Image 1 (cartoon, rainbow, N blue to C red):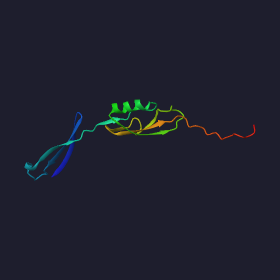
Image 2: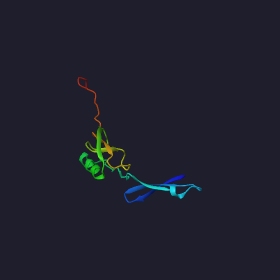
Image 3: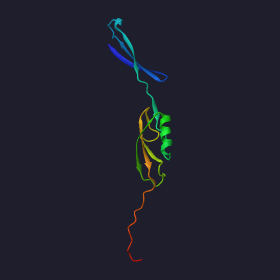
Image 4: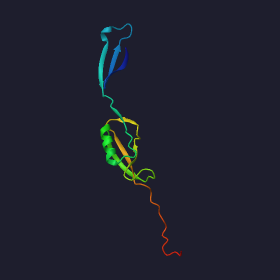
Length: 122
């Protein structure tokens, strides 16, 4: 018996068709065809959030069907404090709807530590 399968695309749903065909010399009465539901693939693209404020990023993720994950802060010379530096996974990545996206938020430029020069002669 030969077993084959084929995916039949139907808008927003994919079915898998299993077909068992008897080999030559076997009775055709034993042919079996079965359709199995397969969970529909619902992927979305991570939006570009760099430069957005935290609240704007949260709203954009919600609109895209994604969840806001953890956020961590880091210094950035180019992105103002309180704005998104990058997303994980990166913008443009295709992910499953409902996936979590982590954010790196700018703390602004890193402060420069100056040595204490008090008490030194001028």
